[in-house]
Length: 137
Image 1 (spheres, rainbow, N blue to C red):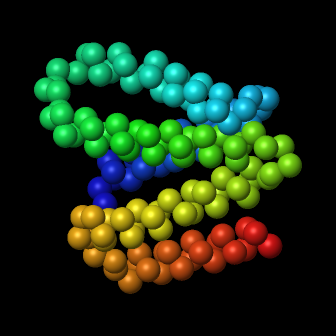
Image 2: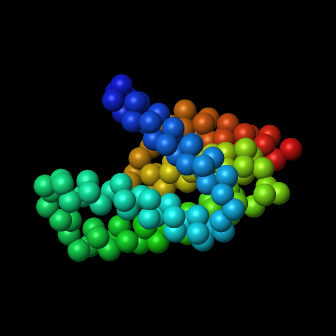
């Protein structure tokens, strides 16, 4: 991994780590959480999309992107539920969701993109499952 890839990974983690803390301080429903996050994201993304001088993707790519967006929207609603349910501890529920993500990516990468499941990925997945178990105790 290059230093640039590592930097952007950490920066992504910082952004994705802070916005749930900000939302947790509100009293909005999961659907409003998803809506406000989507609106805020559009505010940031739209000008960048308009400024960049890139060709539009194919219709097939747009359709696949919209399908991914629908799945992301469902995930945002569920994420909003984790953040806005006061009796649930955000320090447990959100990390569990975030640990499940790389496991899904490892299996999906193997199934759809023929990426190898290396011993370190297997070990990381086992540690993730162990982390979920420990967080639930």
